[in-house]
Image (cartoon, rainbow, N blue to C red; front, side, top):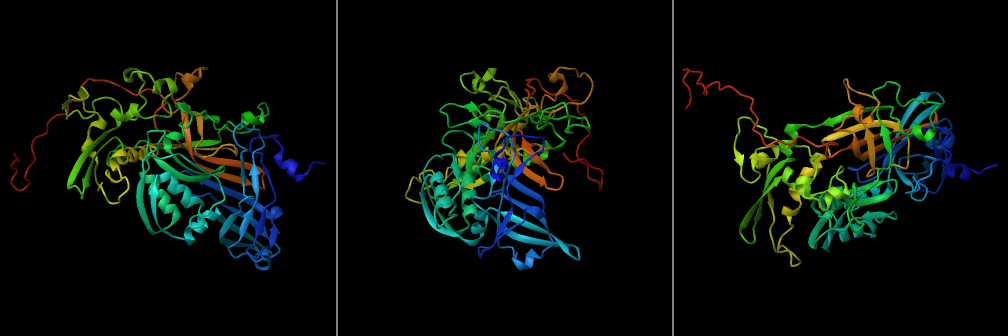
Length: 504
């Protein structure tokens, strides 16, 4: 008879939503252990690119008053692990909270009847609790990635035993942190860091099922560590459908094929022009001032001009290296077309009429870039001109096209993975050809930025809610050097309502 460990390691997927789980145990700070596996009703685990730590909650029914006898006070530890039973060429594909237990930080009690209570235990990675307990007051000197490694691993920092994957950063900096929490320091560094091996200065510090990560956003869609830029492979492919029965079990499909179906989906974000303009997504002006040298400088950012200087989700290896920019397909979010019919100013720089990326005064940023604050590599200050505008643009862009889908659980997917989504289009003209069935702008490579794992013990089903983003369209955008003519009619000068005189 197979042992519990053999059952857990099995790679036999019986159906979509099938999962293997170990015993679930609560460990008190006094060392007492209580196995609550038979009482558990539901488990939720969350990972998010915008969150520094894993979190979740577990719901169980207490019929033996374990809350008082153990007791459970909200300061315990939780131990369990779960996985989707399929083989993977990448990682083990599991969430293992037996090597590093999760910290319970909140208890909610809901009386069901005279003899039972529903207990909800909210838990988080133990690093998150330590992050609340300590503050760091130190001087750092050197590259930013070295500071992150020390803050994460040293006993005066997060003192973590987990893995941390770091993308190296450029330049050396000296800075002081006066009584600041570890994660706040790392997030501050993430807002300033410029990567050594790629172009986009949008760093994230986050935890997923495989460990902690400190890396730039373009490292998610390109392997920036391989010596040459290689697109990351798509970890999985999903087929979204407008059919109301999509995602239901089909006895004619294999369990692995059923994993690719989508139970429901919705497009949560699809371009907000005013928000993008005000945030400087497409164009901005940065004014830096140097109090030491009594100087200031102005830098302009243009999304269209910058497009071919950075890597993109839909840009392949050939398009990124060796091709003349004129022949590279443009998948950007801004059409290369004249936008305002009442603004007919011609740009000698771009040899075109103004598109949305040409309004550099849409957002004006003022930042200090004072040199010689310290005696170490400080002739350029903190080099805000090298990261601020690009980072602001990419952080806005990753919130621009966002899609949420509910799918069968798959622990082999994590935030930071690239997947392919086939998004159906509406209207006539669809045929058996997949290219006529899909929305050409939304179909393609998407980045997973958040995952909610939900294990329903009662129904024995594991589902996931995936949040995915796309930073370009999946097809080329419009390009035209013609002036936009809408023939807007002049309705007269401003009028003084007191005497009906027109203002000149």
